[in-house]
Length: 303
Image (tube, rainbow, N blue to C red):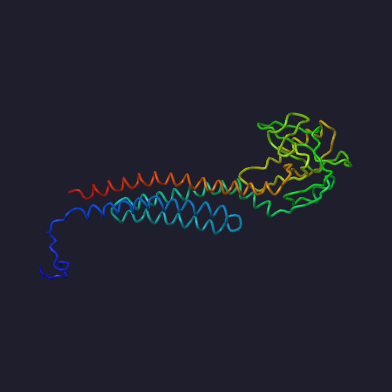
């Protein structure tokens, strides 16, 4: 039985001396493979989650939530395996994947609410053309972008800057036939003086006759509509004008579509920058964890 080639692995002499070269190469390959996994897998988790928030979350939030839960479960599985398998590699991988899940969720939500939500909101709302400033704002309550008639203008002599931490600027949008009632207001932040001055967006461009509606999108970042309404009240008192009870606030722009496209462009830029930064972070954390895992494994093999 002692010489059975099956039990002795084909008759090989187990006492034969090893050169050490193959063992070193195998260990090096294992370390490199483990280090690559500790870097690549968490980075991939971060990329997938941030992209899901950018391109899927607005229409299918449940799908994104399932993906996040799935990656969380994967992280827990790795940590659980570490208690059954010798070494800390699975523990480090589980922790790094969980960190990537949390960071990807936070960054993805921020980018979505800051950029992609605004882009999708303007796509979902209507675009009106040749709107007279005297037309009731309530008739265009679902507007995202408004192209006013060529006679429309902003009356900078009735502009007001309302200070509440920041300076919130409003100016009435009127035409030559309009009375003192104002239905639409151009608005902006920190781009005017206290009275009779308004330099927000394209206010200085005589060819600008359009507005991008400042929407209440249920974002993390408020539209400041309530503060603009306070500025309107101040303008009413200062210049003896009357505002609609529910006016529309717009950013005065020459090309409204460009504003919407900028939100998408900024969102993609945030996405690329975030993935690049997290790659660097993954390289650092993955290298540290791989070194620590290697030290633990070497200490375990010592007699």
